[in-house]
Image (tube, rainbow, N blue to C red; front, side, top):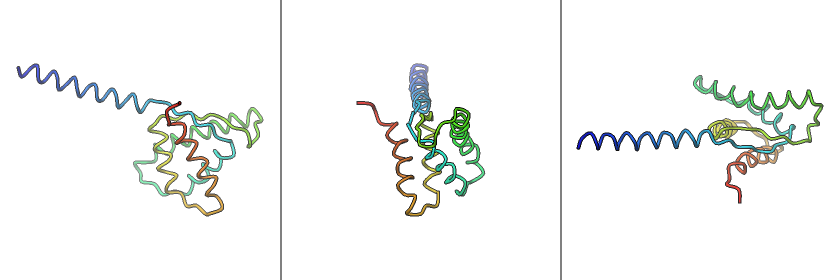
Length: 126
């Protein structure tokens, strides 16, 4: 009897862990202008971090930097749009970092456009 209960508990824990991993691996694909990606990178330069957050910041920055470098090689204009790809976890980290960025009222609309694009990409398609 104890073995059956232990087996059931292990199965439940395993299923829960697998579900959580699958959710973190879901890919979000926000469509964002190159100029907004550059704007976001500028904001991220001014945030305060804890040492444990450095890897997460470098991970999301590298996704955006690679996309901008690719655009530069292809002679894309800043007004053109591209699709970024983030896991749920990366997108959550990016949004959390952006909440720490110092903003002025003049850039509030750009900030909102960028964050709204990420949030909209997480919504289920209708």
